Amino acid sequence: MIMESAKSTLATIASMFNTTPVEEEGNESLPINEDVTNLIFLAESICKHALLAESCQAECSELATKTSRLCNHLRSVVRFIASAQYIYERPIRRIAKDVTRKLENAVTLVKKCENKKTNILRYVFSITSADFKKVEDSIDASIADIAWLLTVFDSDSGIEPSLLPIATNNPRLVWIWSYISCIHYGNLLYRNDAVKGLNEFLISNDRSKQIVVEENGIPPLLNLLKEKSDPDAQIFSTTALYNLADEQERVCLIVKENGVSIIVSALNESPSHRVQMELARLVSRMVDLDANVKEEFGRKNVIRPLVKLLGIYVVLDEGREFEVANKSANLNSIAGLNEEMTKNGRHGSNLKHGNKEEREEEIESPEEILQLKVNCVNALWKLAKSSLLNSTQIAESKALRYLARSMEKENGELKIHCLSTVMEVAAMAKVYPELRTSFKLNSSASKAVLNQLLRILNEENSASLLVPATKAIGSLARAFSAKETRIIELLVMLLGHMDHNVAKQAVSALTSFVEPDNFNRVDHSKAFLEFHGLPKLLNLLMLDEQNQRHEVILLCFLAVNVGNSKEFNQARAKTVLAGAAPYFSDNSYLRESFIKAINNLALYQAGAPMHTQVYTFMVDT
Image (cartoon, rainbow, N blue to C red; front, side):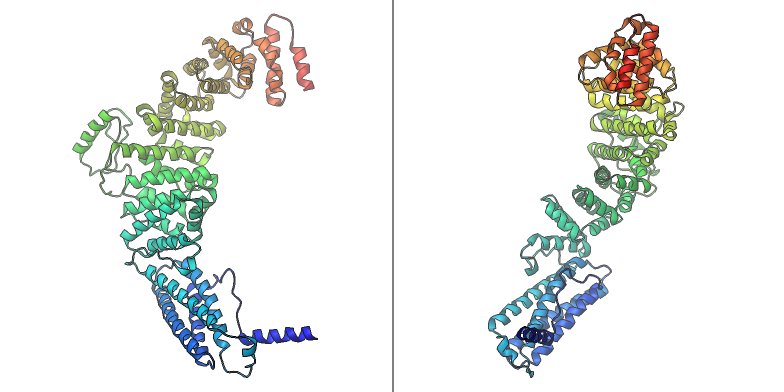
């Protein structure tokens, strides 16, 4: 009975105080103006209850005065919300949640001081001056927080990174709020400073990046990309997005905010090559982290502006003027620039290739134009990798011609990235026949690319160039006719290259030429023997006894195709194949070719029959 009575008493006390529990997560389902308006009602109720106080009247009056000041600030916030086109809600809701808790504590306190029939409560709960001091301090803190909100709403106030009471335990939160608010509401000068400041936080640590994301920092950065009149703002915002986009989850958040469309639009329309240089770098990072983003960029046709930028001042045919879309360009200055670029081997321009809009002139160095092209072709490389959509768009545009010209005229990073792009497009063409038709030799673009690939195989010695070029040739093996023996000759030559990776890649490429699915496999195999490829292949097998799989597979296909040749009869290929049976035991397709090769060698060459033993081994395995 005593316990039930106690519970009843506590329930009565609680109902008399009429307190509302604080929601831990806040009520973000309410419109922001209603959220702040509810705070005003709560503050007004404190003032009303303070007037009814019978005890601690002086303290209640002081509390009411402070609450009235807070109420005025809240009304200013409501007026701003009503008039603003856009509201940055995160700090408002966070502060409103904290103010709600403090005002509810104040309501509880002043209600204790009212003259009611239940005065016995005064003896149950003793009220001290410390209680009022604690509540008053919390109201002062709320006033400071709301006053700070009003300053960041002012477009002329700049960045206001004061230490707010609400962020005592996390000072960087106020800085990030200040920067994001300034990007939303500040004038152009302040906005640029804010983005630069935000970038300093982003490069400091991952926690700062996470706070920026949590506090909705991505949308204002994307909005800055739309500021075509201010290239600096676009560069700063692109750099900030690049720093954020170092993790797949954050890349997906950028995409969720319509980031792909905004980035592609800025890449198309920005009047500055410096902006486009940074945007291309951002595209590379995003597609490198998420395959779905790669396809989304493809659907938004990001290939088109990247290809146009790669083609800035590229001469596609002898005697042809540089391809520029700005017809009002001074032809004399273009001729002078042509001479300068011929001397330096680099391209500089104050015009944009292929854009219909009139552009702002900007002074750019040849190094900047070169870096722009490097970033664009790097993005094309990442976009093409394992993507049929993007590879098809590249193959069907002028990209192949620009890539071929850059492979011919340029050096270093640009040349390597161009090769890598061709390599990835060719890799997709190997899998998809409809794409492979883009590399038919009756196409001028494909001829240009293939000629450059063959030139690299013939003239270059660097593995960084030879490996992608050889891989591209191997992927396109089915596109070559039986008459293209020069390709086989070059690949055979690479079998003896001093770099092991180059030799291995040459083996893989040659395998594509002689494998069972290649219609011209027999002719290619004969060309291989004609250029003395068999001794080099057997030498490779001897040098690399630990990892012979690719070499043995090539030898197997050759034995199937031309096992009756005198070259095979003179070489020790039969013995090598006999000992290579374990390489074929786990693949039915290769096992069948292996058995054919053994039978061919046993049938056409002199020596003890061995195919029965090998066949038995393969079946047992």
